[in-house]
Every structure is written in structure tokens, then in C-alpha cells.
Length: 567
Image: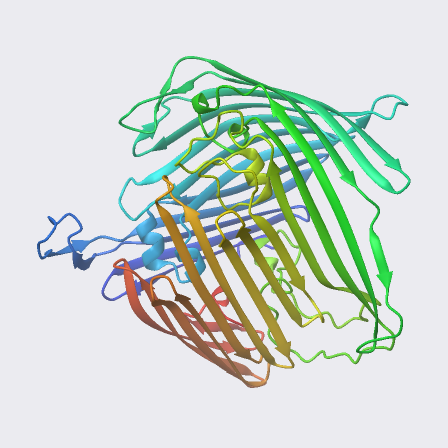
């Protein structure tokens, strides 16, 4: 401890076959409204014998010494003063191979994205003033240099919420953004920073007529770039020093009829039940973008296209009201892992803990089931000529509907989206998100999550299935992965606690990872052991054994960290 507001932890691990791994963490809390958390981890790797990736095809590759060492530095900082808020989330990773080989948390090890940003913001009377610097990296493979890097340095963003125009029923709002941008990848580089200026004013008219909610909006957008994309048969294109201006006119009309509801007579399972149906539809029209293929891509602002469409959706909600007080089950146990087990609201990294079950008086009414169905009908299936048949197309209108790309040809109907959520009790949570392509008669994506807790026992699981179009319509990518967790007990439970977690890739047909942990706690101390298995291709295929011995109110000794625990 340096003083009452800051401390420093520094040390090193020694891997007998790989080398030294220095690491450290600096934490500071200068005031109640500010904090700094700096983490450092590095490995000086002697290397590991692996088949030569550069060996000629159809030959037996020779074993070569591969250095997988590297450095990862993470900075989280935040401060609030007067009416300003400053935030920095900076992540530096020297190589993706290093993360795959040495990160001890599976979900972090396979994460190919590295995001860094720092911003200063002020919001006063509905007007927001922001300065942002951001760097985004996505490692496409373990090959050195195979990475996409996008830089915003800096971004000045001025915006407002909707303000009433005098005493009229009309409201106005605006967004003004100025950026310095660059993008690089193996086959493309924009070179020096590119300027982008975006101005988006709009006027809306909200109305409420006999229970019907209507909202009309008219806007205009003007975006100026100091460079544009020119065609190049040998690559995705080339950035040329020729300014380009993108303009459009936008209009929309949102209609929400009165909700339909019914309260059922009598009771079922000791509860009174209510069903609510909330329909809605939105018409959107955007015109004037005739240069979509010449716009450089940096973020969501650059994929705007012409569109003429209708989006319709319906939400079903089922409420239950308990008529008699519920018997509380407040046994200490493992927190739920998905929808019902969020971290607490603290922004300070070392203060975040898994959510504990709510043992306060239960609410009188619970939303037991929520089921949302949504789809779009494209009146203009070519999006003003922006659509390229036979290739993957991503536009603002498709991203606003779903994060799963589906446009490879002209079409009228989007996939049908289903979002189904259950929460019958504080200890039960289930969710199933589905994108079904009606035109092709297949599932584009399906994500299912389930958590159930009975006393000290916890069962959790999930399945993620994705069918993504590649760069061409014949290049389809499939993903199907399962996760299962079984647990008994809790971190501070006296006696025995245990948990096991496995991840299986059904598409590739192999076990990606597995771990099993067990703990025995006495009044004075506790002992934990863990077995962990990683299978990440040629980069990492290993078994690990870890332990921790903890003394109550004093400290712990071992190499099983708190962030790596399953419970």
C-alpha cells in the first residue's frame, strides 16, 4: 500500500519451460468520483516447438521454435468534475498469439478484438459536447500482421436531445461530428488521417390520438470526406485524394396502436395473470445516396444507404401477480450466470462482484414472459443500387434490425426475428434469440441461455449457432458452440463447494475447454483446487492444475485467481 488512496501489487511467475512472466496492478481512488486501475502482464518466452507454418504444401513440416511471448497493458480510469466526465479505457496487446497462449480465462483468450478509447464529455440542458480518441483492432488470424486497425484521432461530437420549437407541437435535434480517421489491413491502407464531417439536423412531430401514438420525422444528412474509395481489381480498393460528399433526405413515420390487454379470471399457480400485446410499425424512406460504393468504411456512420421499407413488430408480455406472500429462499449459493447474474453497477473494476440473489421482499408483479417478433419489408430491394449481388452487404437498415448479416441478393423480406425471455423466479432465467430466414427456409442464428438455481445447486448452459455469409454468397461460415456449467455451493460456504464448466465446438467436433473446481472452507481458512483444459488449435493445447489456500481476513496463497473462479 502506497497510501490510503492507492496501492501497487507487483510480482512475477516462472514457467519452467517458457520463462518469466512479470505482472502488476496499480490502483488509485483519488476521490469518491474518480479511480485509476492499471494492469500489466508480460511473458519473456523461450519458445515452444511447433510445426513450421511456412513449410511447403504436401511436405512433412519440421519443428521450429515459436516465440509466443508478448505484453498486455490495460488502463481503466474515470473522473467526474463540475459538469464534465472523463473516461479512459486503453487496451494494448502486442500480439494475438500471446493472448491465445497465456490468458487464463477462455472467453478473454479467444477474443480477437482490442478496443481503446478516451473521451471527455459534458451534457448541459440536453446539449452534449464530446471529444473522443479511439483505436479498434481485430486480429483476423494468428499470422503476424493480419490485423485490421481503425483509428479515430480525434473525434469532436456535438449533439442534442429533442427540444420543442417554441409552443408548437414540433421538436428539433441535431448531430454534428468531425473526425480524423485512418484504416489499415493487409491489403488496404488509407495512409494519413482522413477528414470526415457529418451534419444531421432533424425535425419530428409526436402525436397522441385516441390512444394511438404517432411520430413523424424529417431529416437531412450531409457527410463530407477528404478521400474516397477507388476501384482496384487487385484488392478491395484504394483510397485516393479526392473529396466526396454524401447527401440524403430522410423521412419516417412510426405508428403504435393502443396495447391490447386481458386480465384472466381466477388464479393459476397461486398468481393472477395478465397478457399484454403491443404492436407497432415504422415506415422509413432515405434517398440521395448514389455514391455508396465510393465511401470509405470506418464505423456505422459510413454504411448509410437509400432505403424504402416498412418494419413491423409485436411484443407479447405475460405478467403474474402473487396473491400470497412468497417463501423466501435466501440460502447462500452461486449467483446466476447469464441474464440474472449481472455485475453490480459499480464502474470501479475492483468493486465489481457477481450479483447475489435478491432476498428482499419480492415485487408484487413479475414480467414472466416477454416475446418480441420483428421483421422488415423492403419496398426497394436494391437499396438504391447499393446492393452488390453475390457478395455480403451490410447497410444501416440491416444493422439496426439484427447484427447477423443476411443480404447477399435482392430480397423483399428480412429474416424474422424472435426474442423470447423467461424469468419465473429470482433464481430462474432463460432466453432464446432466433433469426429465421423465411426466403431460404433456414436459421441464420440461434442463441439459447438457461440458468436454474435450487438452493446451493446451480445449472447453467448455452448454445450459440451462427450461419454467416462470407465475402461471396457461396462462402458460408458455420458456428455452433455449447457451454454447460454445473455447480454446488458458493465461495464463502462452509464445507464443500464444487463446479465444472465445459465448452464444446459442435461444428469442429472437439472440446475447446473444460475446468473443474472444488473448495473446502473451515471457519479459519479454505483450500481450493482446479483442473483446467485448453484446446486452441496449434497455438495452445495444455492441461493446468491450480490451487489456493486462504486465511480468513488475512490473505491467500496460490495461483488460482479470484477472477478465474467459477463460483
